[in-house]
Image (cartoon, rainbow, N blue to C red):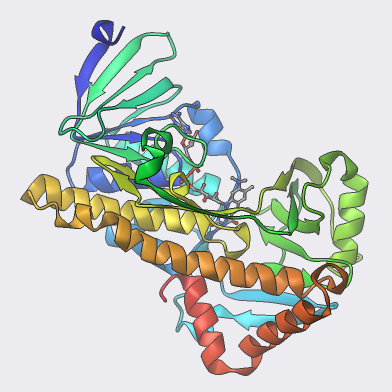
Length: 396
Ligand code: RFL
């Protein structure tokens, strides 16, 4: 079958047009390196997928350094303040103050993705949507290739020098690596999460609320869009979360009787897993973003790690392609994993602070006291505040 396929060649095949793949592709284009992006879904689907909303300072710098900042980030406001609402009492953490103005920006992930897609295509990039049955071959050879079927069912084969596996946790890239070639780290929480996306006004500041009613968070995702998180028993039944119960619980947990509601457009019980594979490369295949690691959402690092990996890979590919120097490619995995583990720890730390510090019955009195003490520290110790702010900014 492969013999009958339409054949093409490129330098890098990028699998997946999420934040990771699109960032790799745009950075490669800026560096004058040919690439083809293969995405399983339609353009419409990809630019509507609502997920993260905070671009940390380190990720912002990736786009500014590459000269794409104006096109990608225009109008994205600085993150500024973060509110912890503890038993109904607000405590504002000034991330900008503690990082000397390097706190990052608010930008809904789907807006960033939309801009990455149009920037790449406007510059003549080759991005193929609705690519079915994408399969990676010969990844440990000098000339790997990728096969897929286009929307008309026509089979294609692309030969390349390198493959970037940017197809998320459930993609086809990571499974190509033999299990014995990878160390896989997994950690599951005893914490359940329920998340809601609603057409309702964003909070004044990103808000994390802890009280005996349980944890809840409220983040903006645009001028009239909000993402909420609610603590729930692990494996909770989605059907038990009627719209009425969602708004009643949010008002209770956020200690805000006047919280405006809006149409709920999505509900999900989130798997709060942590996941890392080491190494993030195999032969000429490089895993980027969620394909290689998952962090709990509370630290806001998933999207930012994807951008950080993409930056490391694009520079390394540039050195290999332009200068024949593959030293940076050999360092790709250890370089990325250092940040991944740092952010994994930060995300888990913050998750434990807000979840254990909320509901004493679930956490137990000892963990509840520890969590409240940890939170108190960032409001009382300037050194602790700075460390926390630097982790948020992605500069630590
Ligand atoms: P993505 O965004 O999942 O993109 C992968 C792309 O690959 C495509 N794909 C394939 N293409 C071709 N062939 C195949 N066989 C393919 N299989 C998959 C997919 O269609 C998709 O287009 O991974 P990427 O690029 O690594 O980016 C990672 C981020 O999207 C992710 O870490 C964050 O969204 C995680 N996340 C959050 N991160 C934050 O930093 N802050 C947040 O507040 C935050 N909230 C969230 C989140 C993730 C969520 N999901 C996924 C449950 C909230 C939610 C609800």
